[in-house]
Length: 157
Length: 194
Image 1 (cartoon, rainbow over the protein chains, first blue to last red):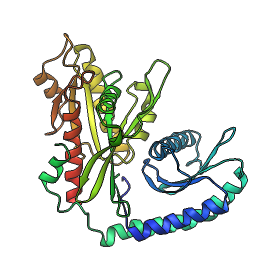
Image 2 (image 1 turned 90 degrees about the vertical axis):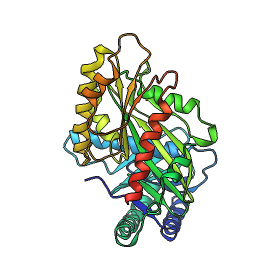
Image 3 (image 1 turned 45 degrees about the vertical axis):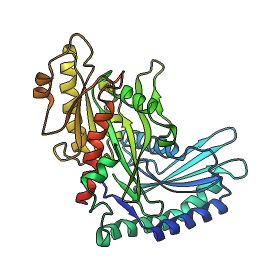
């Protein structure tokens, strides 16, 4: 079955941002993202500047999906981490259930440090997302339940 | 899969353009990109071969406006149409909220349309979706070419439910936004159901 929609409350969003901010600090990273496997950006923390975070999220998800497909072809469930090292900037991606934790770092940090710190927060983020998903089922009402045809039409006028 | 963020008051939905090779999926996105104000859309990312055939996907985020205080953002994707990229097509359908099937109206592409439609149904099923239930639009593209099949015949062959059918010439933009509207409306209407 497809995954249930993610409905993120303001408080939950700020808790996630706080975890990302801490990870960014202890891993000396430039930017830390939480993205879902479908390519939707959930939260970002750091020196975003002109970085196109939406495209990066989508490409990261495509990257993980493609390598996950390769993993299955050779009999693995998935590759839990991916790293891309450039001359100056590098990216580390950890797969946490239905989410991806993406860390962008430069020479101020190292792959080893980023891997270690990412692993340390992975469980915490997984637990938070579990709670969010469950809460979505229990007490959430879609803000669009009252949406009218006029509301929809107004988007296209 | 829809993502609703109450903190940033945003809603994100994923729409996938599907269809046989060279039917005009990328051309649809390119037209939307070219005719939308830069502040309403992000970059058009194309993962293509050196000969401009889609290798993995094209991607473009598009902001349509605000509904009930929430910014509605659609993430538009295309799949690679060539038969041997099936593994990639499956991956791109993950988390889809709405599908546009772009059919090539030319007579000689009818078999390719049928094969691609059947492939869509199968790949959706493998991701846990039912084509009969998800928001879906059939676009009949390339209506400006000389060797095309009449609309009624194409619809009779390719229509699978009561989906909207839009005639289009993606290269000039005819029907491109009508198609997008038709699928976006269905996606938003689904949200109303919760």
